[in-house]
Length: 265
Image (cartoon, rainbow, N blue to C red; front, side):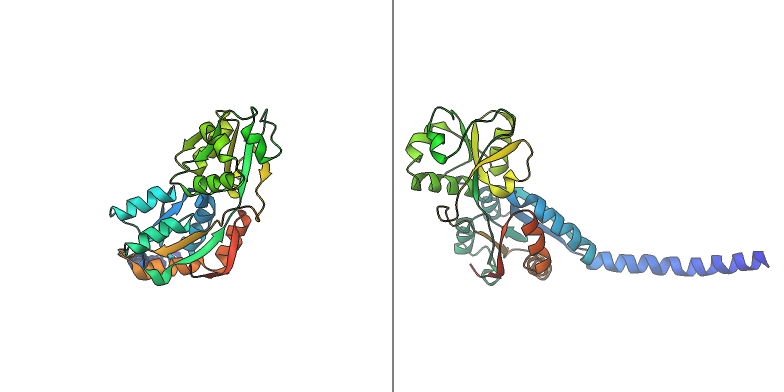
């Protein structure tokens, strides 16, 4: 009796296994692999959003994080990308003028704020932005202030405060905002200006001063589908997910200011 039952289950298992593999293969065949070019400051929030999205859909999200200026240049030069998520409008404007994004998909999704950070241990004693112009700070880390959004925003703020002439010679330009944060963490500079969301990621720095919204440049993170995407439908679906309430909760958890509902740039 036992041997008969065992043979029965072996037969059923043999019949079912091919069907399971066929089902999995079908799902994999319909899955998309999307390349998302995104500002470095979005790294942790987007990775969390993508992990949940991959489980829900079977699609795979591959990120290229960096300075928005560098990513925009890569897209201009033909690098394969499906979505661009910039830390400022200017970089997206440049791509739109060249016809490199799907204009109707462009939305300003997030905002942020600037902070001055110093090392948690033995950091410079800074109470106001004016302290950046004193001997308390010999080196000030900024993302490259001519091309990288975080650095451009910081320069605009310092110019508005009439501090740029006094601090320009102290500036240590970095590849992106995370590199500016790392320079402060390592003690290679006395202070840095980064996004509030980046400062929150580090236990090695503390916020010495947060720029009030009334004094801050208009910080905006637009996103759009890249026109040369080979998977426009899948890219559109993920962009829609980035515009969802579910994604908003993740962005807010990481300290971003969510524009709700997201609106066209």
